[in-house]
Length: 148
Image (cartoon, rainbow, N blue to C red; front, side, top):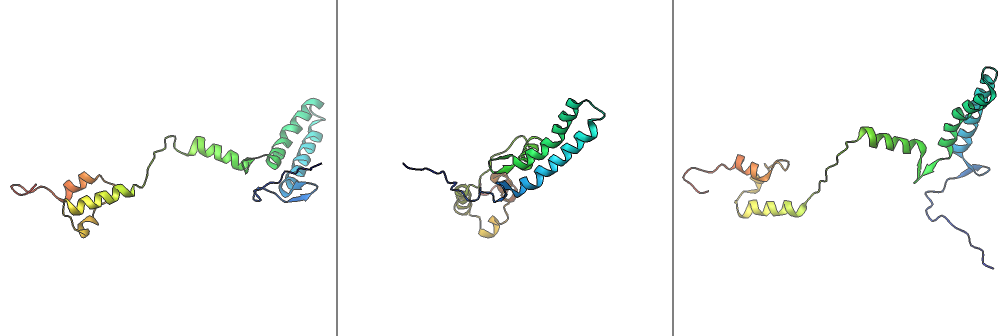
């Protein structure tokens, strides 16, 4: 009878287990969450009813348990939340698609050299952020009565 074992092929995803199958992150965050939750429970059970004290304990401890154990697509919870905040509030809503069209650039250079007879020194003066036609009109104004 064949025995089949799944092996994770991406060794970057494997986290080193420190104690009893828990990672270092979980070993640190689980006791902190448990200590805070239990502390909140014992402080509030005399003042509040038992069920409300337990719910408050869960609310205090749950973020630590989530931060310790949640991992999605290689991101821990704090990285995931930071990406959501960046996407929703910090980054622009409209993205423009810009390319580096090398063929178009070479075609413009060839046109400038061959058709317009512009020297390499004058070509260096062109700033690529402005339009090609507007720059030509600024630098090479048509002569009155001469060649166009």
